[in-house]
Image (cartoon, rainbow, N blue to C red):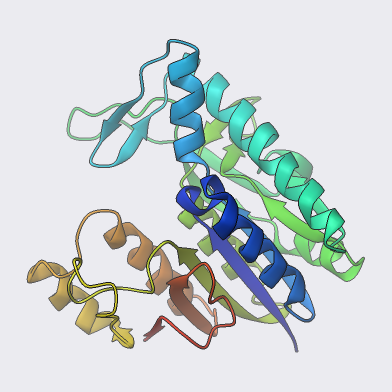
Length: 257
């Protein structure tokens, strides 16, 4: 099978012009087939504030009421996505911006209320259409995926970008050898959050559990690693967590079964 690389870029990198410029240059240089998945939470928070809409978070996850749904749809599906597409076109990458609703590529359901927390219009993914993505990729198109899905009943749902990256990578495994790279502002998973050079070279599923129990891995890194190990269990060949300027897969933290 041919190889494909799925890159997920976080919102902090999207907001930093120098990091973003380098990332897009490096992404354009990746040989062969590729997909870009992006976040944009910081931009959404900024735009919401300008519109007088309060951002509500629980354990680092956004509560998406109807007003915030309008904001994230505009920001993720429009402002961030189309700017990335335009800049990739300028770099010679024939990109196509997609939400999960476009060509029915990712279907989800509204997250149920749990422990008294209603996240609002937030989607938990049911399935991704790897065959449709495969068709686009084989036509020479590079998908650029926004963190929005739909429920098949006319509703857009805000969906975690790491999850989008993971399910996108998994959906492509029948067609390609898939490498999934999560890039953000750190060099990888850190043994000491105050030391940017304390990168853990590799983590197994068993070691991940221990790192959570002893507090080394905490906060937003937990769902990122959960998504990573889910991808590995479901056929993705390689998962790497690394800094945005190191998306060649040769640096950072490599995850293994």
